[in-house]
Length: 442
Ligand SMILES: Nc1ncnc2c1ncn2[C@@H]1O[C@H](COP(=O)(O)OP(=O)(O)OP(=O)(O)O)[C@@H](O)[C@H]1O
Ligand SMILES: [Mg+2]
View (tube, rainbow, N blue to C red):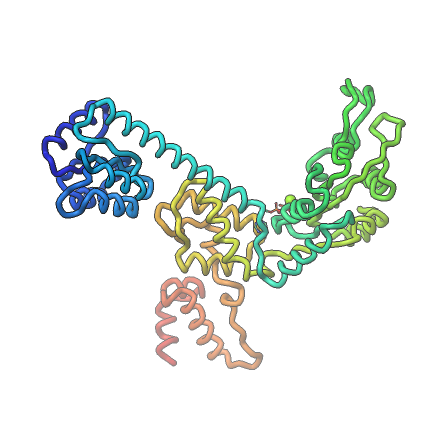
């Protein structure tokens, strides 16, 4: 609270401390501003007329330093106009001198309520940003641009789509996008993971069952295919379907028909199928693990999703994308990554693809203590990468004299151990003095 009148300062401080508030006092605007730089304030009570920095100027400066602070002006009589101007500049309220304890506390309470609302709103906003970001497909690399073009082209039709890609490349994300951009977007989008569910359970999930179809089938139950009518069905890991289920699925694809388990009535549905697999279906067909006719039905349009390693250009964007999401989710004010981290992320081969990258960033966000993510925040699999295959080998042309081979091997090993001769000697299985001797000979 800032006022040049000591009596007022003390009166206010007394009332507010009694109400349980912590009060900082300043005898003019400049002092108040100094306090704001070092302390967090929720509410500022400021006299309009003060020597040096006026109440209005303090208001503007305070809002610039911490936008969430609420300012209540204290005015003498006759300066109502200025108080109104202060309100236009963003003051929350004003009280006139001499003021009553009740009116002071009412103004303070209302200002605090408003502030809580603003903060809550901001949290909601952050959550919204997070949600919007979540469905977004990041990818400016040529490989991803081709994928996105394909998605756009096929979304409008009802054609069956097969998404093929290693684990964690974004198959489900692409399936979501196709449904979202399709005319069916306001109809159901159902997902079934064909690998996660045992055969009989999977069939009753997909096709439903009649009462008494098997022990425990106490009442008729609709299957996913029925529920997805006029919508889209995402069949994840379709390569793991059992032969019997493959045949039934083929019929759904060809005729749009099926029966509930234990039922005789044929049901007709209009469903778009998007299937995904991380195995080579063509290979599975050759090995007779997957029906050829079903393969051709599914493979009308294939969207191949390249491994992350083949679209390294996307890594920086993805990295920042996941940082934003994770930081918002974990309520952390993180600004970015150290250059070493960016380097590590760019060169790591990412066998788990985008999912692995996403997990690594989320973990780093949780562990991080500063404003930037540092190498120590990354999992050891990424930071602890030993030297690459190429760095660990040297090429020696046939016919190189042995002595020179020895020299080059010692030099290369020393390079690896960063000049540590004892370690190099250990690696080479010789005494360190031998290294010294051999190097001297050169
Ligand atoms: N291009 C991308 N842009 C933004 N986020 C992505 C991208 N690709 C994948 N992701 C995110 O990475 C995670 C893994 O993606 P998704 O689940 O779609 O992969 P998947 O291929 O289905 O993996 P799995 O084979 O393990 O089921 C998800 O959180 C997804 O949102
Ligand atoms: Mg998946």
